[in-house]
Length: 621
Image (cartoon, rainbow, N blue to C red; front, side, top):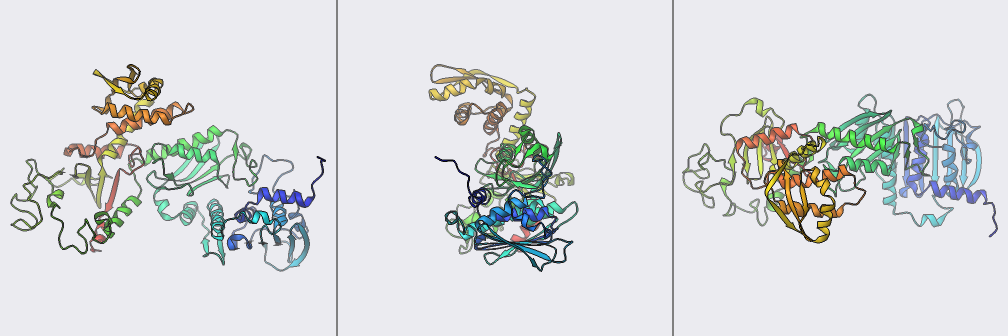
């Protein structure tokens, strides 16, 4: 085939296809231009999700009339020093995006520089330029894009619905607003409700903007992050592990003020939450990375959505290490929305009835009395010999005679009371309060100064055991206990092969195994801190875990995963009666242990109900 030079029109359309994927891409380029121009107010107007109209108006420095024609020419920019592509301190290249947009749409650019008596306007339609012409406007710039992709109708067919494209535009504006809290943003149009982000200033500006964009609930359930390593700074807010979402749309990353969706950063975030979050859930975070522009390449993607760090491992280690330190400092803290969900269930009756209105299986509205198998004593504390504390044995319910449908208190309850007398103020002032009772041999009820705490004893102890195992692993001092008679576990040969291949890893966490014939292993030692455990169940679960690993899994990650599985088998099980001192010891250890607000699977270990919330449930407030 003959080699030939493409026309400028074809070149511009190809360039436009690389930069402009959808209406949101246009909004991103234009808003970044406004920010680079020092705008303090930016208004975005769209119609049909941006397909028929995009208008971006700002109060920035504007473009001098003599330079306005250059703004719509390719390879023209005011944002780079001469031939230095590695010291980029701006968000975009105004003269590169505008000709790409003009090649595939109807573009109108009107701007007034502060030093000009009036504004000027140029238009580009399908790559054909007209102007400049005088125009009246205040200092700043307005860019109007109509009929996107009219010059390339094939691309137009691949756009999604107006609603989907409008949502993408909203996401772009939110990300840019997060990175620039001092700028006022307004997003409006015939296809949406007006969205306004007021400008903020001072030390709390970033937190205020994050609350505007991501909601106050996130700010209340997040911890501040601020760490520096070898000239790279990480700051922002990271959600508590128990505050999570079903997808990753609530994860925001910024590099030198530029919103990115970088795979390295997303992977680092997953790694930081690896052992505190359920596998099918996603963390919520707004993280900002600041470093020397020469240490990051922002031009590896036409739309600058990805970046490349000179020292990727440094950045990944900073993200993972800083977030894990934050979680460790958060300690026992858990997110507030768990309590809110519990209160909502109580308020609607959904937790008790399954229907929220006293339907089958409940005793809400429509039922005059509880079902016959409901036991009043199920919530009544016991004294040492099985009697109800503070209540005569002959009394049931509220009267002298037994009430219909209520069990006698002479029948033993499955629950126990931790303390029958007054509790010292010092113990009530503790973050998790003082243990008062155990319900259904599963939940510890604790009283605080202004409410009560419900603790899942198995989930809480599982986390405590796991953290002790990790600490021992770090010191390479996992104590082991030998078995008098080795436990032989039979499994399929492929599972046995995996276990034997990882025998050295397992030994580091205190589990010593050796092959015992073609289809079995013999367990000779177990971690001492686990006590008496179901060895067969533990080995089977470990074999299942090993089947999911690949050869590139790092040793530290392997050991943490094994430790988590062991902790689950070695923790206090639901259904075990705890003594009063054991309940209090559990609470105190939770307060002193990192990450104790959630178990190894990401579930909350405790829920707090404030007295004021409980009073509202009963109409007392």
